[in-house]
Image (cartoon, rainbow, N blue to C red; front, side, top):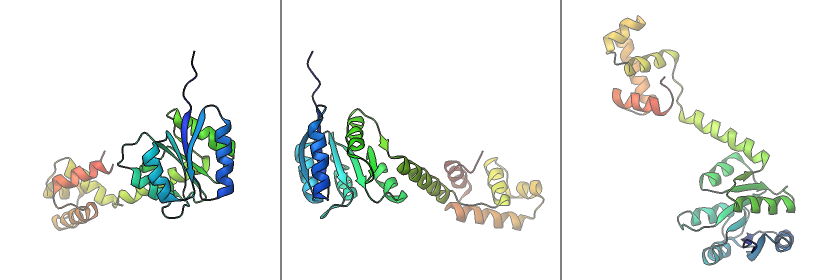
Length: 214
């Protein structure tokens, strides 16, 4: 029985000593094969396109073009390459952006050489690997963006939106909530403004999209 072909790996790492340490560890593993390395982002982009490695390990802090820039440039290339990002910057915004772009692994610079190689191997098998600290930041960013996407309606505005969705007219809404027609109109205008719409149907559709309607 023949052994499976090793996973081809390309390394783009700014620090030459660290880059060589990772390269040695990759060469030492029978399941991995190093096919190229660089300390420059633009060179990495060109060589990844030419070599089409199975895995590209990208340092976020690269001269010429940073890791996220390389990922964005590769986004529409339809390459088989999966990306593992290695970064001292694990801010929630960066993590969100690169994961949205399709990065399959994200490790901080605190990761050991063994953890890096194990992540490369896992990503090659189709897994997505995020360092624990990165996972918590990503969850926080997702919650923050979801909150930003969901406008804050007052309790009365929420009631008005729900009654609009139920098909009630302005006078009917006023009667149900015991408020005047002019007050209903004020609430309706406020709901429209917060949802960025100009009519009832669009308000209902936008309210459903944003999870504001039951």
